[in-house]
Image (cartoon, rainbow, N blue to C red; front, side, top):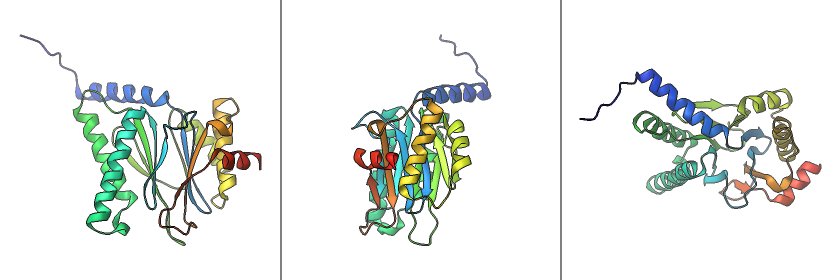
Length: 228
């Protein structure tokens, strides 16, 4: 007969939290900023094909840090959920809040019921129409979700990045300034210069004439912004 040792629930949750945090800390951070045109995500990412920042739906973007396979799985699930809701009801019914809640429930279930928690942190943003309020949600590995305003950082150096950005942040930054300040903050925290060739950035731009507001910034654009 096999014997399973008893582990107090609080110790089990603590061990899972420490495991997830260690995995997330090994990943590169992502910064989310509200700016004059909408919401911009900026990350250090040397890969040209394995994206940390992506579009989910017309006005909604996604960013993840931690274990790539796990946050990519969640991104795909979010795209499917958004497509299903938009097809079943109306495209305007697809909201970042609903996606954040779905991610929260999924991660909470995984954290409490599976042996290994997901080693991920997520950002979900929705850009508002002119005059409206943007939405920016931060979802942790255990399903905790917070509604952020202005700026947010996730990943291994989140606290340090938040402190650096807090001192400089202005809500009326244009896109170039927002990207430049985000990269400057990441470089300062990492203790080295972050060049445009290893920067990934995407913006939800409310001024775009198309229905889809997400746009991935090219290396040339990022280089121009950093040199500005």
